Length: 114
Image (tube, helix red, strand yellow):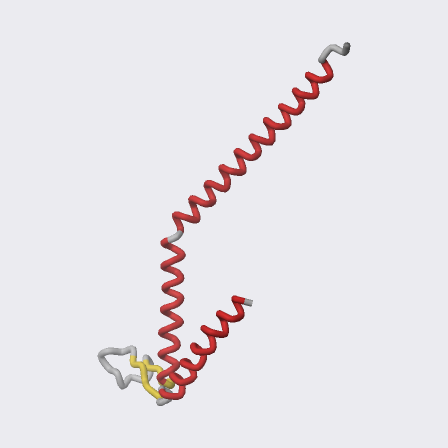
């Protein structure tokens, strides 16, 4: 319920802002990728301005996510190493527990009966 409420509180205003931004910036602009001859149509793209804005936001999100993912690599590696080590110690404890149970049953069987 809380997640749904947060989604409504966050996503509805973001959606309204995106719609207003799209309507306000719908004039067509040309992005020229050739700095020496901007009139060259081979390396230029014409689209509404909000498309370029949205693409810039998406590229920024992807680059930010990639930077975060790479910077957290050492923590993921440490978590994998510690999980492997924990599994090893868990197996070791289980082995010792089974050996202790085996010894306990042998001790009770070998104990003299009065």
